[in-house]
Image (cartoon, rainbow, N blue to C red; front, side, top):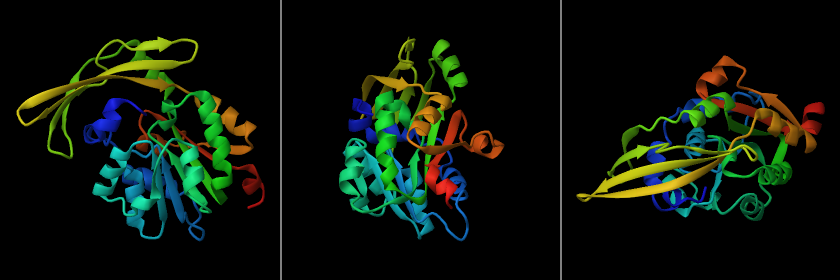
Length: 263
């Protein structure tokens, strides 16, 4: 995500995207590990304000990392409770984590909140390829995708409706997401979504308009890539509990086939 809102208006972007139960989502992920062999190392990719990571810190026994392209998001995450600034890596994936985590391997790599929609298919392949050596023997990758059914309804019939939130700087933010007609590319399955934010501070209002380009992937596409890279795939959101905690999303769990075959 490189749009100007994300980079230069991080607190306003965060105020709009914190509308989920991050604690419950993390709990579900941690429960997939055996009680006698729990998750001990966690990294959140495309972390933004890193609210899943902050919940992991609260556990007290997990080595927590995060990675994102925005220095502004890192600063916001630190102000909200990310306890180890040196372990929040700023840079583009996968190069940033390959160059900065040293010999650390992870029990859990989280790519949530439809983070893959920010990157084209080739980058998805490259990222999953480079994540393999970063996994421990019990390591898992958790990926949240858009539910294509709901997404196509959203694209075909966009509803422009302004909503109001307050950001961490105390500014009033009125936003429309989308703020107009969505442009859909039938060949690449990308949606160009117009978004408008009106940010009110010190008696004035600043309007920020931008286009969010979202790549829409099916679970089958990601599972196909995962299989090429010798991952085992599991579809988690068929479970009603997972579906309820990740509304509008499809959740996959990837693990190394060799680890599954030889526990």
